[in-house]
Image (cartoon, rainbow, N blue to C red):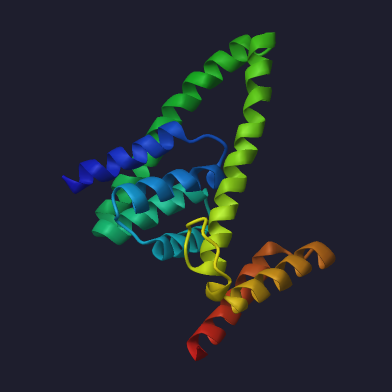
Length: 187
C-alpha cells in the first residue's frame, strides 16, 4: 500500500509542479513532510542538500532519496518513476503542440504569463530552505533565540565568495560541506 501512496505522491508532484527543480521543492515539502509525515523538516532539508550535491535534476534526486529513505532501493525506483512519468507524458504532448502552434499569440501569452509564477515558486522554496537552515524550522515564525549563527556565517561567506570572486558553486559546496563536518562534529 505504501508503494502506491509513494508513486501517487510523486506522480502528483511531477504532474502539478512547473518551473524546474527549485519550484518543485515546496510541493515535495507539503506532501512528504506535512501530508504524509514520512520525513521531518530537517530530514527534508538534508535531502535537498544531498540532491543538490549529486548530479541530475533536483526533483528526481529528491524523489529517489525520499523513496530510498522510506523503502530502500525499490522505494527509490518507484518514487523516481512516479515523478518522471507525468513529465514525460506532458513534455511529449506539449512539444507536439508547441512546435505545431508556436507562432500563435495565445501560446506566446501563456508562456510569458507563467514566468512570474515560476519566480514566485522558486523564491518560496528558497525562503523555506533559509528558514530551516537558519532557525531549524520551515515555519514562518522567526525567533532570534533559535538563530543558528554558524549557518548564517557559512551562508554569508559563501554568498560573498560567489558574488565577489565568482567562485565555482561546486567548490563552495565542497568547502562548506567540509566546514560543516568539522564544525558540527565539534558542537
